[in-house]
Image (tube, rainbow, N blue to C red; front, side, top):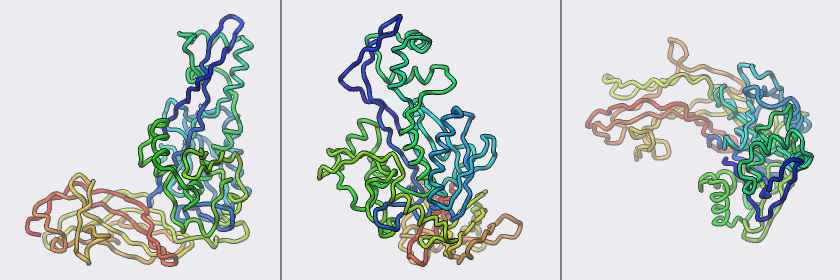
Length: 457
């Protein structure tokens, strides 16, 4: 997300004891969240009055989730507040956020505290997709410049003293000094701790940690909001430089009705954006909630019930981990491609069926190669695949020893006419939820190097 400040027409005058600076009054925007999209990603419900989550990305009921802050950034006080707001979810969910030291080598969630200089904003991976992120990268980002209590610093400036002298020493043009300049100078001011707007800290922390346990944006509830799409695209393009795809992903796209679990749209959800009347066709508007709503409590309690081992909303899920390599070789004796991926696969408490799929793409890896072959295709893409029934609550390693236990074979004669064309092989794992008749793309785990296909195949 790109963070900017909205400059209003009005201006205010702030007087220090030894100088006068005219600050063009600005209002800090409520920076929107860009929840990272998950495979098939990327942000669920059970009782009346609640919204949406991705059942396939929730943690296992009773999980302890390891969380750390990154890079030794952030004062003790702001960290403690973020932890406090995050752990509010534990009151309603059978989950534990266990905050561990910054130097802990392996964690599930990693919190990065940034500022508007980074242009990353507020966002989080959804649920268990946090485990797909390298340990050196954050899974959850908070823009701390959004947390600054501007009014408190304006009052501090009026008093004069060290803060006023610091600001005055940085102002080069007193008649053209905006609140974005003021905010930047506040961030640079050396002090033990900042003055925080805890209402904003609380809402953002609750919202992003809601994503981290599987909740999606509430405005994505199917049919919940009648958007004036052209106006919404223009607003986010002008204000945040978002592309149409970013607006679709974070604002407009409705979730599958499956993920509402029969519940109703919840305008009070902490997972909801602000909505302006001019953004909708019927003038509907709302101010986003600062607190976890009653609906939020009900859905998270249904997803992670404290009174049973497995939620009635649980679906078959798998995790692909420790992917080490994708070995693709041309076998001139068997006359085809031999594909042997190496990875670990972990299943959850609900039984599922897995499809290991190897697709053919163009040499640049950007375009799948179409096929009309009914035996060797996946959604009309040239492919070979191997289905497998998985035992619940199990873990298996594929091709991690000298004895190979997973091979995909693609005969040249079953491929489209490639006539010496170079192709790449993309390996993907799909999980099939037999109970709900739904496919979930788990991971595009690897792409091979370019391979020359034989002529006349």
